Length: 399
Image 1 (cartoon, rainbow, N blue to C red):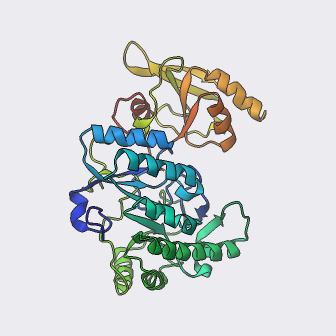
Image 2 (cartoon, one colour):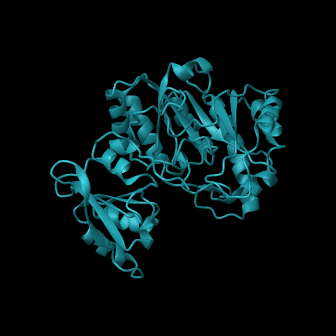
Image 3 (tube, rainbow, N blue to C red):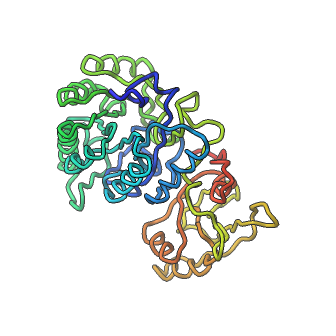
């Protein structure tokens, strides 16, 4: 097992720091019960998914965390979506980190789709381990959990896709173990769907050489989001005890994962002064000194780009970063022309903060030098981080 990673060693949780780099912008599966903006990581994340970074931005983020004096022994490639839906970005990030910090431990979290073909390359990079997010080994169970599963460019009926996903996950475990890469499985308990099936998952993955399993309860993304409730502690204890008959079960808080920076403490390593992923992005300046925000209340980033009628403009005002003005957004219904017009409206802005946006407007705006960041946090906190203030995320309203 890996002595310097909290997944494998309880002692490491308070002694060895780690950082998760969100460089995966695309998803290839969608669970029926989770908010699309949440990281598909077994619901063991702290807060909303961060904005995805480019490999260069991810390296800058790592540099900034290390420059702060924080000691790290592990870097994980994980979220906000699936690392191997965009394998080029994942491998470029791994390569950059390995070249600059050759002694740094590396790991990846994935749902396993298509991963077996990359096992040898991952083994060559000397990964500490790969975590596979696996909620069932019976396609009939898996089919009930997912809204869609898209292997590569293939379009399959869900019943076929569920069988494909399970097969790929099992193949990934076999290939990774053959390549010398330790494997951990993360499983989320969905009451009434897979809660009676976790022992089967544990038995099957243990037979393939998985070293440890992390079992976490389903957490509704917000109150009232679904009819499914979080399984209680007694149920979780029973399920973990059953699975422990086949392989070691990771003993760790349910809330730990994608947003971790540092060692795992009471706040899962977030600490009072989190260095956010946004701090790795270029600071607004030059001919793009401003940040635009889609918000209905002026407190939180809470509006879909397509619904925005006005955009709030933030920038320096005699020193402090302040709200400068509100600019009207172009009217709806004109396709790419609308986004071209919006690019002209925001020609002096480096970033546009929205709660959600389609791929096409993001692509058009990116062509004009405007990076769209999806978040639902407090405006002041995110804007401050983008300008290098280092305050991290504010206490935005949660759904």
